Image (cartoon, rainbow, N blue to C red):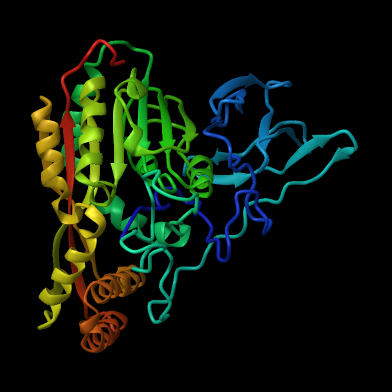
Length: 435
């Protein structure tokens, strides 16, 4: 079960059924990074520059022609200057004290005139827990044997783009936000306040999905912040950018940059000047080598890491059922396929960071799912049981009956679930490169 979407703002990330293309072939996606672009900068509501990708794939700032323009990146990597009908360019800007968002119409300027870019589609409807479909990203079906269906963080094959469905990320975001360990924030704030330099925080969010970590954390930290959002999926990076917060806890400005990248290639140099590295539900889809790489990059750059919502391998269902333990063990074995660490990831991360001189703190961060979370519980159950059956096909017949009983109890409001996760804060020793 991976990643997250929107709740802490009143505007919701819309669902996007059907095939997803980087060029918005279905008329649903504007301002997507091009397939050959490695980084694109999305300014906040008051930002006056956008990033134009260079030939080498790096981003360079392009001052807006009228101090308010942005760029539309095409599938081929070309950029078109955008201006709205009223003369001011805007993407999604905060509206009112509640932090809701509104879309302003954007029109690309061409030699022959202007043409409207479609606005974001209407918000999604919460899935019906009785629906027997599995949202992509919640279930076990993988593109290749041993590959997780939700994300690929390694450059190990053809450039297929596995998707986290925004619907699944949106559905789980409230539970993620409620679960994250607030007790780790005070030591993190103290560390950030004592970093050398006062130019603001630079925060790298690895495997950002639709940006839920930024929506949760940015409004809880003081000072100006620049978030660098990393993900393999440009479609999700688009969602993360347009739905990112624009204001910190003390009213300081928050800006966002998106990058497509590979966590296995992360280096201390790549994190030079970084104040914090964050991730959600990431560690359990990494190998031991990749966790070592992550720890080496963070400790080498002297920046703390807040890594949340890693699965702990334990699930408590009420009322209990004789198959609960069998399904849990099969699911945990499924998570360890292909060299991934699954429920062993937090222990491996503790060892990796500690061996490199970091102080590590752990806090539980369980999902607490009751009748109010029936839609999420139903989707989680289907994915959880499905992964167990994929690991142990001989369970199929009994597991189908088990799942049917559990879904009926869920729909009746008679099922509660505690899905155990762990949050990790690693405080690396500061270096001269920290800012």
